[in-house]
Image 1 (cartoon, one colour):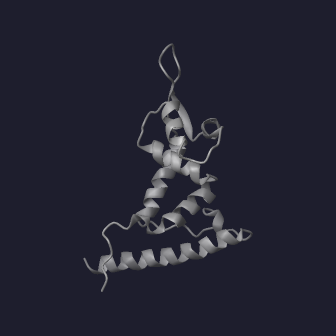
Image 2 (cartoon, rainbow, N blue to C red):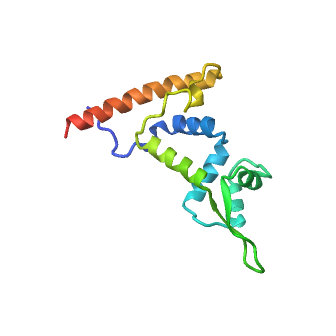
Image 3 (tube, one colour):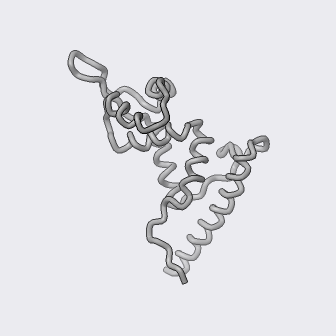
Length: 150
C-alpha cells in the first residue's frame, strides 16, 4: 500500500486557486501578489514593484489593488520617509481562506457562498464545481478515517 506524504498541501492548489479567483474576483497574479505580501507585513511600493516584475505586466496593479482595498496605507509619505503599506483585513481573510482550504477545510457548495455553484456559470466553473464536490467527498472520507484511527 502506498503511503501519502505527510504534507500534501498542494494537491488541490489549482481548485482552491480557482475558487478564490471566482469568489473574490481576483486574477491569478493578484492572488500571488497578496500571498507574497502576506509575510512582508509592512512594505514599500518598491517591494511591491520588485515582486510585480515576476508577474504578468500590468501597469496599474498597485493602484488598482489600493482602490479595491486589498492594500491600505500604513504610513503616509513624509519628508524623506517612504510611504508604507499593508494588506487590508479583506486581503488577510482571503489568505486565511486559502490556507484553510489547502489544509483540508471543505469548499462550500452553497450557491450563495460560492458563485461556481450558481445556475448560469461557465463550462469551466461547472468542471471545477464537479471537482470540488469530489474533493469535499475525499476530504470527508480522510477526516472520518483519521477519527477512526485515533
